[in-house]
Length: 153
Image (cartoon, rainbow, N blue to C red; front, side, top):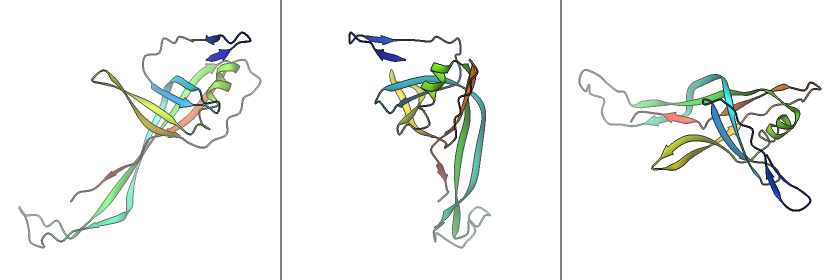
């Protein structure tokens, strides 16, 4: 967390976690600051459905290697969502994380390639985030990965 004090000094507070697995996100909050957090994965789901488009092609109506491919294929689209949580965070961290669902730019870290960081743009599902009066509280949200489209031509 970054703060600027009265003397215009920048104070950066790092909370170190022993967690080495999860989903590492970065986002820009409403003040224009980059925010980073490593979330724990609770669950992952993948919805596959027929896309609206039907791919039409007219290669042949003959059998090829004992198989007739027909004259059209249905596209499939796949949507993966990942349930993320940060267990037992304090009030200040909860308020920091609460800026994530409202962020316009959210990226997920995907590792390194040629010593360069790889990030992919993702989205956070709509939701209601309530801070209760307890000192420690779990923060949960749902990450939405970009849709993928599968088809065969």
